[in-house]
Length: 301
Image 1 (cartoon, one colour):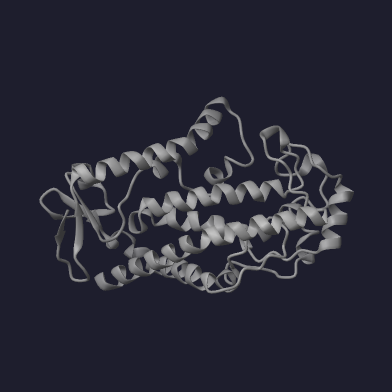
Image 2 (image 1 turned 90 degrees about the vertical axis):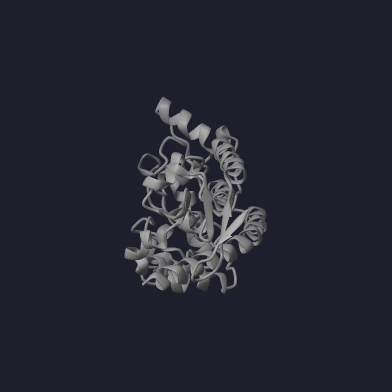
């Protein structure tokens, strides 16, 4: 390991014997997550839990599989990076990520950095009980729901009763925007994209899954180790998300968390707290990495 001095800080240089094993280990880790997705896609099948992170977010399995060291690290013996616009050469055969490749999207980077940083500072709100999925089918018949291939655990009338009794307290715009027209007015808030930095909070499962979204979006800058860690967390968050939904997914091995009962709501909050604690260090790592990326972009400007 050596260092190349830069204006901001010394650049850590990893030799080929150091970084290639790390890249291979990352690829193996990701392959364990993506094999099912790739097999189902080849067979024309879909999975409402395991496919979500690949359908809802834009990162494809091959992109997730690629390893990036992150800002402040350079790779020696990496000629394949010479043609990659995200990287620049700093010495003969040594390449590092170039913040200039996102400089034209500086405002977007700043928005995401502020969103993650501000949400990390808020207390977790744990009273939603995952009813956003219920609000997405509220007032609909079984054949009209998003995951129509899977049965509902309750009748439409039963779903209506649960939502009306418990109320809706969703803080996340990207969940709220899928509420049915009947359900949306019943939410305590009306989140928008503009208000997302004011409302996102650590108790929200969708905000937790979004840690993967933002990490993957800026993978060359924040590093693939963080991307993989947030993906693992997002998978578990999605599992709870759909276990608490009104769908019956027992055929897929997902036992319901029956939030229509006091016991189910208590179980949901317990597992929600676990996700909050797991997300805490990852949210902090992402906030630090995004701040460093923003500083690097601004320094080049």
